[in-house]
Image (cartoon, rainbow, N blue to C red; front, side, top):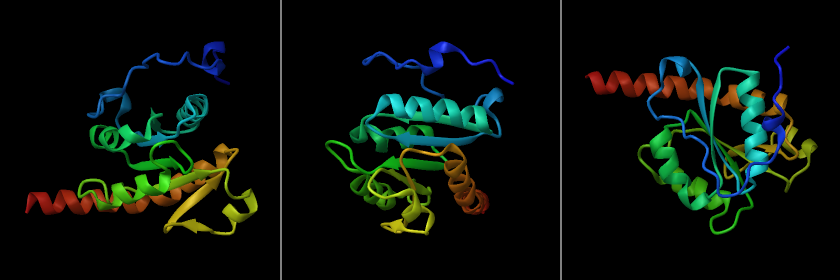
Amino acid sequence: MKKLLEADFFPRASGTDSPQPDPVSGSADKGKRRILIVDDDANSTHLVKILLERSGPYLVLEENDAANADQTAHNFKPDVILLDIVMPKIDGGELATQIEADRELHDTPIIFLTALVTHGEAKSGLHIQGHPLVAKPISIPELIDAIEKHLPAQAECWASRSRAAKS
């Protein structure tokens, strides 16, 4: 069992910058699925980041300001984007619409994270704006299932882009 560090579970001080992963994967991050999580609750995103990175081959980047999420996504080039729905300034629905309209990001799978529905509703296959959702409080196994379910199509999309670029 991995040793857990106390610091991993304490909230980060607001205004502190954590190191941002480089958009170009280093050798240590090769083969990891890149996940961008956008939620205005920094403590929640940090906890989900830790749990996902310890649970599988994931490299998770947190963005706590939805207004910056589009640029963060361009720089990070995620395999999947996790979006909270209720956020100040720009809500998750508006942000999803921006991402879908963006030529570089429109094929990136989006999974909504929300407290607006129950776990039962989320498990029933309910979608918002055509995107799947995971109910809050988040169950990491359910979140991983949702991520893995939506990544294969993304991998095929990248392969198609790569073949098209070589032509």
